[in-house]
Length: 151
Image 1 (tube, rainbow, N blue to C red):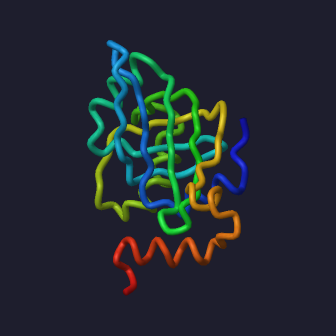
Image 2: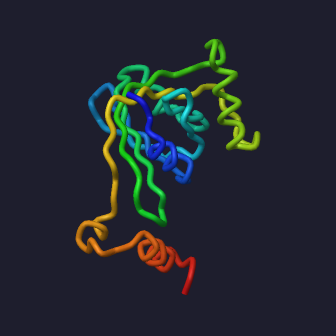
């Protein structure tokens, strides 16, 4: 599945994403990830402090990743299959460059989660649905008030 420009836009606008994996016992695990981007029609995530995520993906590659623009309160939920890319992989250095731009070299990582997307679903704040006249500008102002960014 190809990542649309809209999905890429929300990836770039999002501060965090949440990556869901499943343990060998079928227990879900959701972990926030700060360093992620699109790369060659996939999503790549730096494994900075992710031992549970890495272990779960090695056992079961099915994942779900979600991200939103916190002020606009729109984003995407993507499902797909993941693999762990280590320094031995031919594309590791190219992927690493894309992620190091985001870390500015401050967060070391020795592996990358690469996710091939199989389905996508928009995430939209309920306010847009319950009050269809809500504009994105109104939603942003409301979120800023909630987060204490304006009085």
